[in-house]
Image 1 (spheres, rainbow, N blue to C red):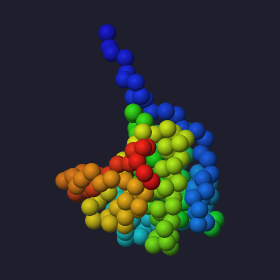
Image 2: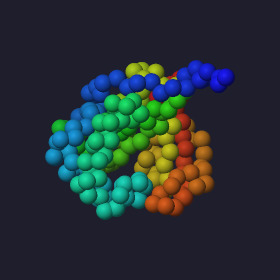
Image 3: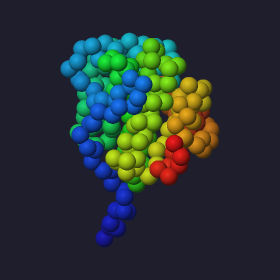
Image 4: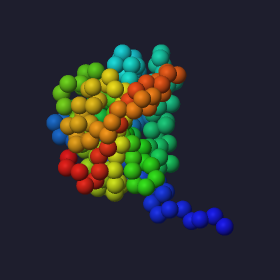
Length: 193
């Protein structure tokens, strides 16, 4: 006879995507797969060399990739395994933030911004607001963040949002078929933010 699953091992269903106000003109909202302007913005953002350097985004990034990304974001909400929000600044798409729920009331966070939104605190506002939603609405116990060790901008956002760096892990990330060193950090619901 198989043992019953451990308490808290299942991923909880996601609520309907809310609109979250992050302050400073930054709003988090659900993606709109049929919105051509948003798809064009995705294409522009993902051609950026910094995005190419630190993410798994296909190179070249084409319309079909944008459409697949938007469809996956919609599917993630429906299936409960990916809560993707558009970072909307002044009514324009400027990137995404997401939580990927895991068993045991944890999630991994990811974020990326359009070049026009960088250096103005937009990512920090968006990540802080998403974390608040995750801890309060999803009742997460903790969140994990990880990135390439060279991605100091992303690390800065994580630190400003209260994450504790747990360490550098050799070969943590797979990037374009190569293993690269990564940094991993965590934030508990009980930690100051």
